[in-house]
Image (cartoon, rainbow, N blue to C red; front, side):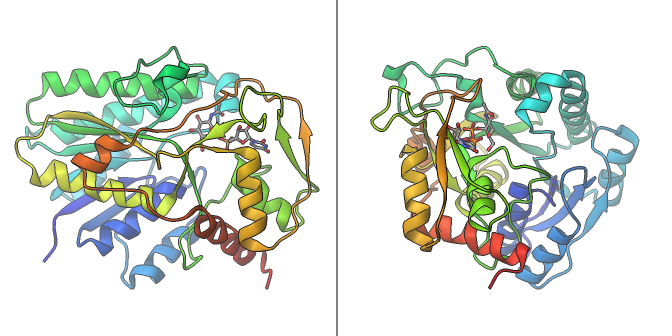
Amino acid sequence: MSKGRVLVTGAAGYIGSHTTVELINAGYDVVGVDNFSNSSPDMLKGIEQITGRPLPFMELDCSDRDQFAKVFERYPDIAASIHFAACKAVGESVQQPLKYFENNLRSLLYLIELSTRDGHGRGIVFSSSCTVYGEPDPENLPISENAPVKPATSPYGRTKQMSEEILHDCVTAYPSLKVIALRYFNPIGAHPSALIGEMPLGVPQNLVPYITQTAAGIRKELRIFGNDYPTPDGTCIRDYIYVCDLAKAHVAAVDRILQVKDSDRYEIFNLGTGTGLSVLELVNHFIQATGVNLPYSYAPRRAGDIVKVWANPEKANKVLGWKAGTPIDDVLRSAWKWEKKVRGIQ
Ligand code: UD1
């Protein structure tokens, strides 16, 4: 029996596709929407191959209210939504802030309106980011949900902060609305089947896609941005979380919204492993896990990078009954398997 219908916006995207798989595996009916602005219809085929079922899907732009309304008309049984659809390139957001405010905020406002308009009470799980914490004070590490939110360093980060505030205000205003905001640390890796994974357009900005493209010979070498940071090996520290573990946390969040009647109507959870790894440590894990040669050199610091951040995930562990447990070497092997599959490497 189905556990209910979940709308996934950005279902063809990196985290959206992995979450769609986990929702279906957990017994939910899903309807996916995407405008393919930064994703490919191939991901939908991958989802269908993994789950062995056709995926109800509508190609539409969530920042166009009339288009977005159609999914609620066609699927009046939507019980909760997971809102991934958003622009996410930090650098681009600095150059084109209006694109980020228009797209990311409009789509959220319409989702809230469409979720509450008939007093129906649909839940929303929102994709937020550890970027809201900015550079944490050292005494706040590992960082928990009650650490202060710092002024955003990019319009992208600001849309995440503003979205959380908008959702909080709307929960106060609309008694039928329940929200869980999930603050992701650094999602990496791909589904073990290598049928879905991360598909960056152009030169990757994020570390793991750059590593796998370098290992595949597409990039000459990895440049490690900064080796003079105040960390044990001088490189930045992050909390790298496996995308399939992250996807499962979304299922737990939807379960909580739909099944736990007396939970708070606005909740925030950090999604991380609780362990920080330096860039150099991650690179060494990749080399060790895959046995592949990875040329790298040290380069100047990248503007805007924070020195170190990793999660205290205890709240999610306890309240959601969820834990990110996949060993980092398995995660990195999954990323490499995906890159090889995309490039046709044996
Ligand atoms: C970035 C975004 C964050 C977003 C996340 C999505 C910024 C400031 N933050 O996080 O808001 O949610 O991506 O995954 O952009 N590195 C290298 N060489 C490279 C690429 C990266 O050394 O070629 C280093 C970076 O300096 C950093 C670490 O690898 O120390 C991780 O970088 P990245 O994968 O881009 O993630 P974040 O910057 O942590």
